[in-house]
Length: 361
Image (cartoon, rainbow, N blue to C red; front, side):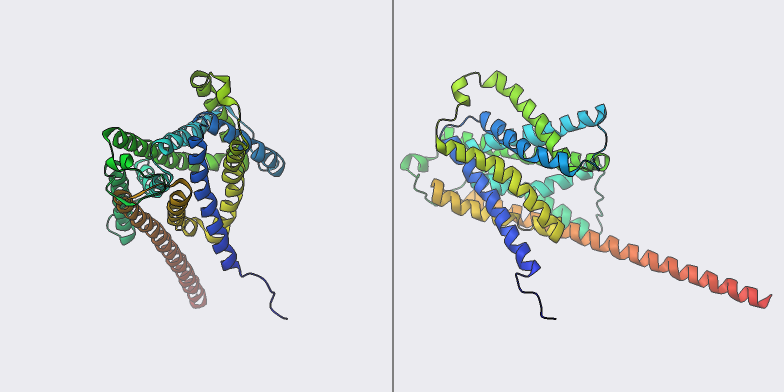
């Protein structure tokens, strides 16, 4: 038979991963544009989660009818807490950080999430750390590098490397107020990364109780929407802030809801299924490069030496943590195979001895 024509599986996965990172990068730029034209920092995530819930809800209801466990009060409380960390705090800190900092540094800071997740999982004893093995040392060194990089980005801006179209002599002066806003933006982004990591750590045991992932995500969006609506009731009482004033606002909000919460979710799930979570995570720095280029071209943002240095440290830390995780899995798999082989050999030896004993009798 002739070989089937078409794109090889590895090439499809590579293209899908690049498209995934492009969609993520586009979300950073779109969110910044939404803030620039005056979309409310509270209204924006509310509309985003409404669209996400409308997209995910029907699929969750029809596709997971048989595998959806019955709801209990305990599960609802866990969904509420998951939404508080993964939706409300996560998205809230992100939008505040983006408002005061820039899309490039938002993306760079997100590279520290695997290291922060590792720290949280280790503290809660969900992750074992082997200090005397190379995988354990790699995860520890990667965590230190990522935290160090995030600290540099937060505390040291440095001189500009490239001037965007929005640059001016006043911008170059780097006044005390602007530096303070920048620092607060990085602090908010650190809160965003902490929330994101906490959401992943908290989600792991909940998924075991409630394996219907689409339904779990839908419930999380639902409770997150309620929480954001309560916050908005106290902070956005002006009805005009809820009105969409231009077609540009419509496109930006639809991108955030449809692409960032719909297409990205399904594409990421497919990529993890085909390539595994470690392989998918290694493409995260591609997003940072794309965001830096897009922010420079579209928004006229500047690149600063402190951000480049911190970003490089975070990327190195990311790869060390991922390599450590991958090496740990390989060691565990090898130990399991050796234990299984030893068990079979002992069982075979025992059978042979019993057979010899029976023949002697």
